[in-house]
Image (cartoon, rainbow, N blue to C red; front, side, top):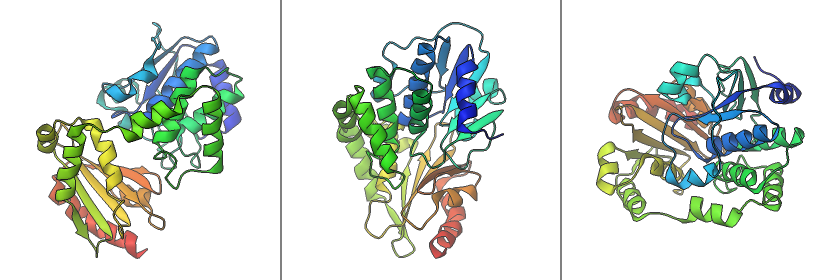
Length: 317
């Protein structure tokens, strides 16, 4: 069931021996909000641990400075930035998918898999929501927490360029900077630093770019073979996704990423007037109006064939 802000606060005040779960294929928002919540609950005197199904990408390792899981049998389980228990990843879903007590999220498509869910769909990031919760709990923010939350806010807004950004988002970012967030270093690491392997991947992807419906839909594809050829890691694909809608005239950008198990992760990015979440919902996925995703178990050509009618309808609507 959905709960209100004051109820979520009460749950965080009274919970004990807390396990925090973040989503698989971790990004800056799930890790930033999860680590900040970890520190916040620790400051409230609680025992806490944080888990993710996948290895943490090197560029996010700084979020875990000084973070050490306590050893205990969890009594209360919280997920952050997770809209569906399947997004926890196979290992965590099997162990905890049906045991989550509280989901803290900002996805309007949250499937309400937890016993209680606090969703702030107008928030630009889960980190924005966690910031407001920790602030209301009276937690004293240390620079480490500010770094975590700033990372989540900045990465989920494309360094404050996406349409999900509000005036409140900017006020929160400014407050985090005043509280010690090293915004310059974070922005350089997240947005200004690219390995040569990524640049090779970007070049290959753009060379194979496909356009449909008079150039209003662009399609990029990242295969396992291409990742091996360029020496890129899975997390490098996150930046490739943003390229799909940066072409003049494109209203919908679609990126197909082949996963290690052979399935396809599809990321959809749209401009104003086209609902990415509605497109992905047709295929069992979800997300936000401008950024959403879904998955297929077939090959890329078949997945694209199935998606093209939905993409055409979205353009018409």
